[in-house]
Length: 525
Ligand SMILES: Nc1ncnc2c1ncn2[C@@H]1O[C@H](COP(=O)(O)OP(=O)(O)OP(=O)(O)O)[C@@H](O)[C@H]1O
Image (cartoon, rainbow, N blue to C red; front, side, top):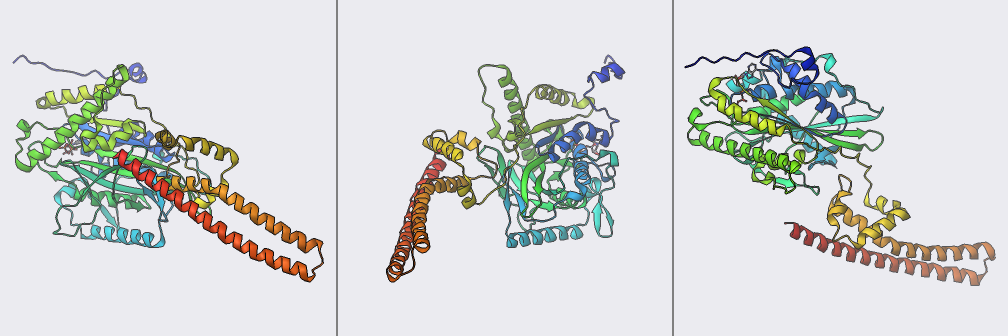
């Protein structure tokens, strides 16, 4: 063969300053990569934004190394956890009274539910003691046990700390989840499965009112420190599907998704949530040529599913890019794989998205690597318009809402009520995060009822005023006493009738709206 060699000239300083360099070479350290790629996203998430980071490349290209890394040289996930906790330091909200819910919402837990959370966490961490480090775990995560704590060797330098502008009462509640997409099924890696039990259950993808996908019944664990978060990560990783292939001794056979949700809480009196943000980190399984891996049986099936989902990711990126340029829009096939369906929100404005492409330099992987680079070149041009979620307004109980509506709001509400059926989607856009149809129903019911309440109130006022006049103006002879008694009886009667009427109106409206919502639900299905 003709001998062909390639030598790469380093960038001149002017070229580097122009931002020509977008490639992290083989000698790049994990810290440099983190600082150059993910650190700004972590900052954004601490300030209330959402971000997605995913690794992409062929098998054996270094995705898991980048994502997780050995503990002496931690990857982007443990570094993110470390930076988050060193940045919020004293402001961790350690209570479990508020928990993330669905995609961008939160829910308040009862005392019993909080006790359940505590019990789960205790139980979950107990597994750590039972873990005899498997050969796989040893490679990626050899934890150092110090006085009962497990932590990584790598700690974040003081310079990596992010300064977050917060008020004196601002606290951050941090929750994490870890799942994998294996053979087009989503499994919770944090679910405690008794030994000998069959494979963990497959979870469903659902959607909130704004169309953001979330994994239903996925376990969220509240963590108070980077150490606790590492423990969760370690236990989840232990449950992930890895196997040895011809190309990689420890090849990920599934896409794994580690999510960090941060609730920004104003902790005065009853804690109020001001923002819910998420950092979603995905380690995608690598594409592979079966001729090279010579996989058979289960490995072959896994490879087929991995390749298919990556192919669909490619189709989505291509369609997004095409739609930015062409007049005739293409359908973006997000729904064709679990992976793309799950990530859809991030490609459609839920937050920022970042892809870390991994390649290895082996000449034997030339074709596959070229494909990956072509794909990255297209992906690089896709514009994601991310919208920072608005701060969450303090939630009020339905009765509070009912009596706080001012006239302008009421008019606006009446106006929108007329077109509530047709303009439903638009009105949902205006619904604050955390509002559900049941809330809207209650809101509408109350505001319809408030005209009734007003007239009842007028009657009460009239009777009360009459009694007052009688009491003030007249001496209290027998006749007035009789009148007073009569008025009291009348007042009681009126009150009872009004209550009945109010109950009837409420019931009617509730029924009407229930029907309306179930009709809409059916239509939507
Ligand atoms: N930057 C790096 N420095 C040193 N070793 C690395 C680096 N990146 C990857 N490796 C090594 O290369 C091998 C393959 O890496 P890794 O398992 O991360 O690949 P992968 O892309 O996740 O593969 P798969 O898709 O099959 O899971 C591992 O032994 C890993 O330790």
